[in-house]
Amino acid sequence: KHEVQELQLWRPIVVCGLGLLLTLALLAYARLLNATRDRAVKIAGSLTKQLQQKQHEIAHLEERWRFAVEATNSGVWDWQVSDDQLYLSDGWYRLFNLPNQRRYLSLEEAHQKIHAGDLEQVEYIIEKAVKDSGIDNFELQYRITDDDNDERWVLDRGSVVSRDSEGRAIRIV
Image (cartoon, rainbow, N blue to C red):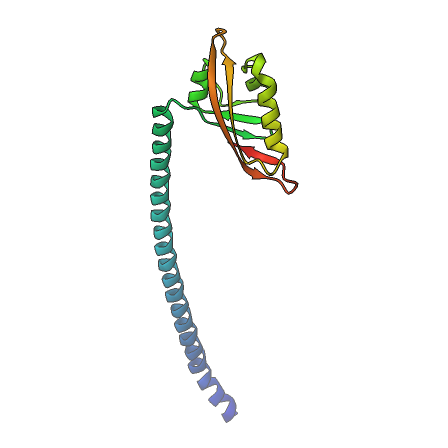
C-alpha cells in the first residue's frame, strides 16, 4: 500500500513534467514555423521585386521594338506553320490597307493579297524554306494588291526560327 501511495505522489509531478516538455516542444515548433514564414515572406518579396523588374524590362524592350518598327515604316509577321496562323503587325495592316480588326490571317488569306504575277515565286520560296532545313533565311521582292487595287512593292525578309525533328519549319518570322 505504501508503494501505491508513493506512485500516486509522483504521478502529478510526472504529468506536469511531461506537460512542460510538450509546451517547450510546441514553443520551439512555433518559433521554427515563424522563422520559416519570415523566410518565405522574404523570398516572396524578393521574387516579386525581380518579377516587377523583368516586367519593366520587357515593357521597355517592347516599346523600343514598337518605335523601331514604326520609325522604319515596317511590318512584322510571325507564321505558326502547323496552325497556319499568320500574325500581322500594324505595319502590315497599313501596307495591305486593311482595317486592323484582327491579328491573325491564314497564309491563304495573305497570299490573296500578293500580285498574281509574283505569287508562284513567293509560294515556291516559302515552301522551300519550310521543307529544306538548309534554308533558314530568305528575302523576296513582290507586289501586293490592296482592297483598292493599288499595287505596292514589298521587300520581305523571313527567318525560320524553329524546326521539328524532321527539319520542317514550325515557325517563321
